[in-house]
Amino acid sequence: MDSQTLERCATEFLKKHFDMPLGIPIRISKRMKSRLGAFQIKYRGNEVVKCEIVMSSEFLYQNTEETILDVLYHECVHYALYAEGLPYRDSDAEFITTLDRLGISRTRTYVYKGRSHLYECRRCRYQFSKNIKGYEKRYICGRCRGKFKYVGKMTLGN
Image 1: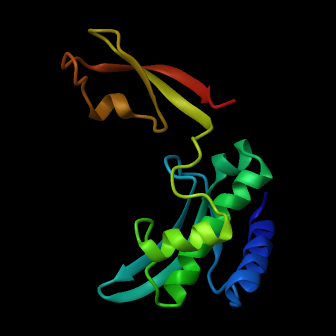
Image 2: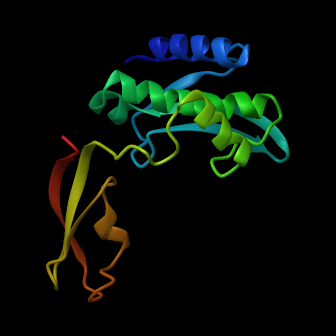
């Protein structure tokens, strides 16, 4: 799904449920790995510089249209409530009520599917995966204090 299709779907959703236009861009990020989508507000001091909805490229590639639209609509609800001056964070009662009313999933409903990186402790052989590369350079094993080695790429959730 490309950014034009996402913008069209978001525009239709916001018009139908909130009677408002999509006044911010939707960007597809190749760097976003730990989140599926996000409504981002960038500040400079106390002033809002930029608002946008960002979707993970890997998430768009690995998931069904139904799942993608559910996450997109979730981010649109963040935006709509923010634009109306209502509480818009994941833990706010207004936000949760709105999601339930519209039949949209809450945060962390979907598991990350896509490429991940496998690491192993050199000392105790503990293995785990992370969505970021370079983990072995910054962290040590919490079990034995050993160093990690990069084992390779793997695919999750397929």
